Amino acid sequence: MDFETIGTPSQRQTFDAVWARLDEQLTGNAAYDLPILKHYLDVCDEICLAPSDLRTAIIGVMMGYRPDGASEQFAEVTDFVAHRAGLEMSRAKEAADSGDFNEAMHIMTRLMSRINLLFKRFQKSTIFDFRDDFDAFTYRHANYVEGMLYLTPFAVSQGHQFIGKLYLKLNDIERAIAALRCAVAWNPVCAGYYFDLASAYYQRRDFKMHASNTSIAYRYLRTADDYRRFYFETARQFDNEADHKFAAEMYKLSLAFGENPRARGSLEYIEKTWFKCATPPLSLDHLKASCREHNISFGPSLNFMCDVDEYIAKIPENALSNSLSAEKQSVLAVWNSIV
Image (cartoon, rainbow, N blue to C red; front, top):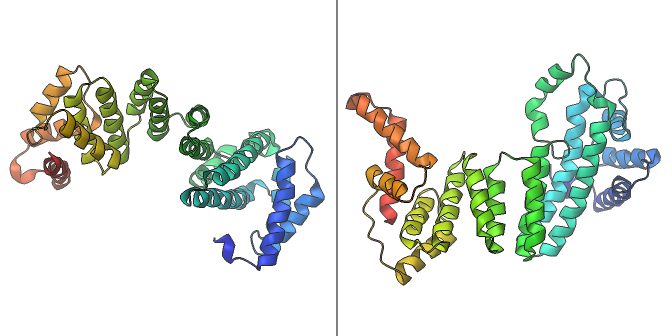
């Protein structure tokens, strides 16, 4: 839903004004003012942001008690709440994209303060009591609840990550590290957060912590972008240690999983400044020998390709899996195009 196309400008202005008053309560210590909540919901109804039959349930959740039927409407209620947070997040991203990082930071810090407070208050709400049907209810809405900005550690961590990246743009490394550590605390199994944290430590020239966070990220690699970032950060480690030959190989592996201007620039600098890399087309034996020479374990992509080779060796040529063969050839083709 695009907030900018809903209702009249006057209605949207009223909505923002009421939201601001509500925000003052959410970020303060005072108890909720029920008339303000009701007025807020009336404005939502007026511009079709929340169905009127959810008013009681929304107030119940915010006030910390559960009226009849609130649990059945829980997913819809949190969808409404998350929608407003999503609008704030979008505005922060628009500000950042336009280069106004201070405004983006202002929006995000206000939003995250509200999120953290709401999260604590929702946890204390009786709507979270463990009734007999609680597990069934949770299962029924599991996929839905997973994406809600206000109620899941996963989504809260994304907000902290965004704030951390904004601080990096503002060259405030210490605050960036603090925000990214919060992101990791809320969601400790996301490789991307560790890579962001590693990058921040690298900017601070804390190479020990850079290596540590890169190593932790290795445990949670899932996507091609994760692999790209892993090999890039590994390359920076070797580059910093003046092992330029192996750094060049890692930069090339990073580029094999996706274009990266920084990896491309670093590779070109190494080739121009130190030597012209004469690495032969990718062979598993060559890559495995390099890893053993530098006493590092095989990365996920290398393990995958070794598995493919073993698979190919055991099965007749005409019975090979097309998908596995295509995957391997794709990686080989990209690698050979950049060496």
